[in-house]
Amino acid sequence: MLMRLLAPLGFIVKIDQLLEVVVTALVFVFIGVVFFAVTYAVLGLIFPIKKEIEEDQNTALGIVIGSIMIGVAIIIAGAIGG
Figure 1 (cartoon, one colour):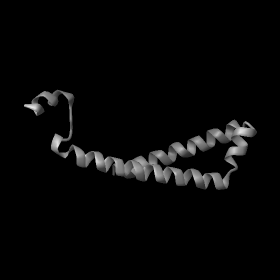
Figure 2 (cartoon, rainbow, N blue to C red):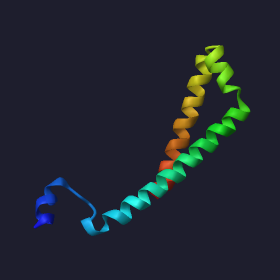
Figure 3 (cartoon, helix red, strand yellow):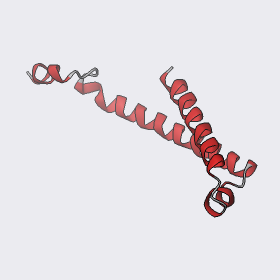
Figure 4 (cartoon, rainbow, N blue to C red):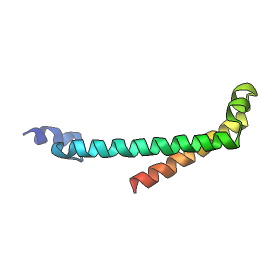
């Protein structure tokens, strides 16, 4: 009965498997955030990000760092998605 009511919502996972899927997703989110933080730390060692962006108002470096981080996020999403 419950599945009949929830079917129009387009759930892909059955209710009894939902906890396993949520835990798996949270593990992958944690791994992705860790890799993202490590990447930012490495970029912080290569470029003086805080000084250049906040103090010197270097917009170009902000765009480059943002582009690198978007690229890393796409790679992480692809690796997690399979």
